[in-house]
Length: 542
Image (cartoon, rainbow, N blue to C red; front, side, top):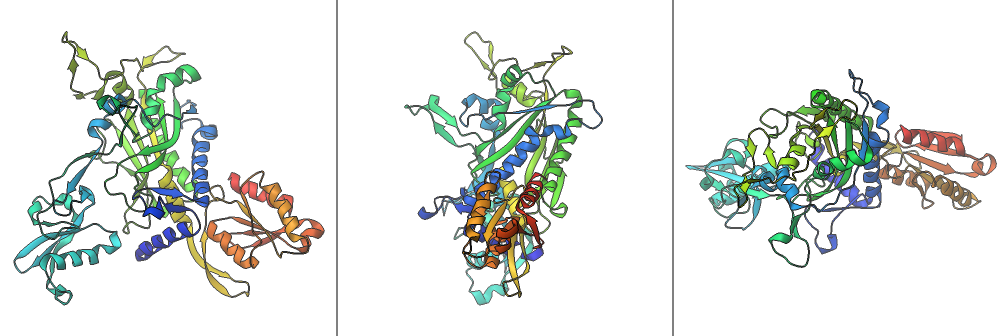
């Protein structure tokens, strides 16, 4: 998409509201920043994404059940854990102490910013040198920074050419002296505070009394519910390592500056697996899940040219991880050549189970500050429960290693929307070529699988079409439409991403055939109704 990408993103956002994919939360009251509501088509699309993921990871995982090079089948099961958990869970997981972003405040405007998201450039005027900043979309940076520099130096618009620039646009993180910084909403330099930690967890209270004992948190991730239920799953399900536990659910992070549509939000849905395996085979399983998860996105339509699998450098790795790879997508709102994270696949070692046993942040080097009781004996912050695993066949006892494929349902849905958005040419009712907007979803993801359209609203065609519609609706989502010319109805279905249209005409009443129209190729084929239904079934199953 090149330089047109921001404009394309604006069109996608507009389409999402117009056709009922996504709405701003609480829009009639001015909206809630970082919160979005899925509309009639959006809720179906997102549900299809989650169901495709659950089918791949849990229901039909036996399609590929053996790790290449190892005689090891595996089992998968699921959980649906509570959003509210014991506060000690977040202490032992490290979220209470370590889950933060660096933020800065403006003493003048009283606004707060995430340190790494404030960008700027060194502006020069005569003997003055100021780091001018702005918070905006990438395509607006050049003009925004020029306007801020003009304001900083007190110049009129016709005097802009007096401003010089030193270097490219960079993050505020590269600047050491904040006295030279002109804040994004400030009227003078030197108004920004030094960066400080900001915990991203939402705090709440449970019960009638609001005190320290009533404090709880909305979960910032779904993974910890799986770890604290590890023994429950092993004991109740009789699963044997290697096995995985999957969960789809809401998580909450108090993002300082949510942005880029549904990419960075405060309430989001995760699709996570914690895969428990023997330490000796954990690296093989890490590579297996990394490659398999990449293939899933490709199979459902994301382009090779817009996807990358990026291994984290050693400096990026979490302190507990021996390997992490991100699946990233070139979203249209990002500058050309940049990618945004869709999913992370992390080798977490035995960090989580050990932390919930012993209360250590890093079992090797960084134990939590040890509390002692009145007798001077250490008090563990962990549960004290034995979360090790004993193999029922070999009788070996060990603490499993964990591989975690963690995907965002909202980000995946957004990526499939961006990939599907297409503008091309198609003939109208008069045969003249006109531009059309079409969402080319994989049929498995499409919110509506087929539309049933009577050619005209007379001669028994609506009744025949309604009968076909009612019959098909028992199997998959179908839409009935008899309003307007059939060509315009095709366009509406294209814009909703519907892969097939079945047109009922006079011949249908004679021989039971319909015209099956393909969304992408616009080819029309005459088929008996049953064969048309079978063609749709096969497309959805792929």
